[in-house]
Length: 491
Image (cartoon, helix red, strand yellow):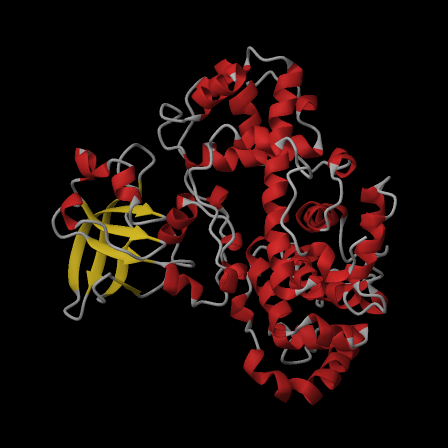
C-alpha cells in the first residue's frame, strides 16, 4: 500500500465518482476550470458571474485598472446590472488615461477576450453601445469586431496581486439574479421522469461537485504537501463567508510546521497577533477573567511580535460586521490552535480515520472537531460577553458538516479511497436558498422535500444552480439545460 505523499500524488480516479461522468456527459462545461499551478490558491473554478459581481462591488473591484494599451482606468459608476439580454452593465461611467477623459456607455464582461466573438456579440445590435470590454485574462481580439472606441480591460493582474482577494469570498448568490419564468422548461422535461431518475440526476451532479473539490485538493497536496494543504483548507473552512481568505493567508504566513511545534496557547497568541485581531488595549469594562486572559496573550505575543512584523494582517482585512459571536474569527482561531498543535498531526489523524472503518464517518469526524475550548472560551461567546451558564463549543455542528463536505471528503478522494460508502454517508445540511430555489425550478412547488433531503442530492442541486440557474439571464428562454436533459435521456 502506498503511504505518505506518494498516496496523494495522483489525479482523482474516475472510479471515485463514477456517476460524475453522467453529469459531465450533458456537455455543460462551457465555463472553464481555471487553474494556474503557481497561483493555485487564488484561482479556483469561477465564472463570468464572479467577474460581474467583482465589477459591480467596489469591495472587490480594483480601484485602478489598466487598458490593453496601458492607460489607467477608474470606475465612477459600474452601471446598471442588466438582468435581461444584452450587455452586462448599462450606462457605466469610467475615467481613463492621464487626461482623465470620461467614457460613458455599456460594459460587457467575459472570462476570455475571445468570448466576445464566440458569443456572437459582434453581429448583435444590443451591444452597439458597449464602451468597455472587461475580461479576466488579457488579450485583444480583432478591433473590427467591436464598436468604435471600445477599451479592453483585463482584471487578472490586479486581482491576483491583492493577497486578500479570492474568488471563494465572492458570494455570487448575494447579487441581482434574473427572475425565472412561471414554469422553467427543465421542469417540463423532468416531470416525465421517475423519482429514481430524478434522484440519479441530482446524485450525478453531486458527485461532479465533489470531484471538482477533490481535484483541487489533490493539486494543492501535490504542490504544498499533505500537512500544509490540509491545514490551509481547514483554516479556510473555519472562516465564515467573507473571512475565508484571511484565514487562508494566516495559514500561508504561519506555516503548519511552525504552528505545530507550539503548545495551543502560544499558537493562539501567534495566530491572534498575526491576524491583527488581538485587542490593542485591555478594556476597563471587561471582567477580571477577560482582562487576565488578554494580558496573558500579550505576554506571549510581544516577545515574538518583531519576528512576524512583516506578515501582519490588519483588522480591516476581516469582515466582522453582522457576524454572530459563534462565527467570530477570535473564537475560530482558538479552534485552529487546538487542532494543529495536537501531538499527532491532524493529517495523520484524518488519514487513520479514512483508512479505517468508514462506518459512522460523520460521527467520527465530529469527534475530532469537537474541541475542548479551554478555560476561558468554554463559557464565553465573545471577549466582551458575560459567562454562559452552559459550556459552548468552539465549532458547532453546521461548521463541522461544512468541514466534512469541503475538506474531509475531497481529502479521502485524493487518497484514492473508494468513495461509494462515503458518498452514501454525506451529512445533510439545512436547505438553504440555493437548494430550495433549484429544487423549485426542477420539480415545482409541490415536490416533496424528502426527494432532496439527502446530502449528495443537496450537493447536486447546488452544482446545477451554479452551472445553469446562476448564469442565465434569459429567464430560462436560452438555457441549455432542457435540451441537454432531453438528449441525455435519449442517449
